[in-house]
Length: 138
Image (cartoon, rainbow, N blue to C red; front, side, top):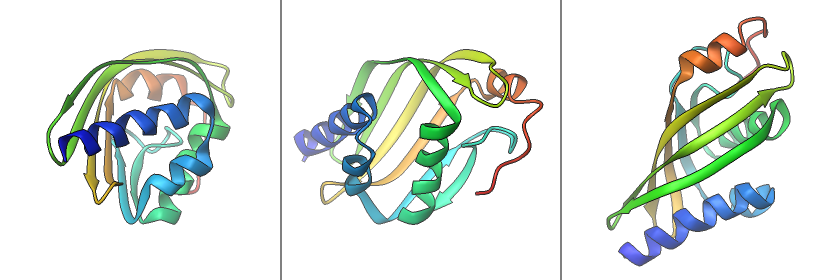
């Protein structure tokens, strides 16, 4: 199962890099949960419970920012989870502000699907760039 978890994690990032959000949504379980820890002014911060709410999260990523850099440096995998570290650089459409941060993602996998995705990064930097943005619908 460790191989399956690693394959799912790699495919997840391939979908993001290629802009294949349909493929990405197909990887999510119906009861998937996404948690991005940060203040509400960040468009994709919050707790997204269920596949349709997870679509909102990725909709904000796809529509509210330009991804200027997004690398995966390390994959640490066991049977049910992958921890992935890397670096990202984003430009927020609403403000034109750019921020970059290291991140850690924890991806929980069950039956070949992503059931939970947790995103940890320097949300203080992101909040500073988004300070003038109205809190989006979640």
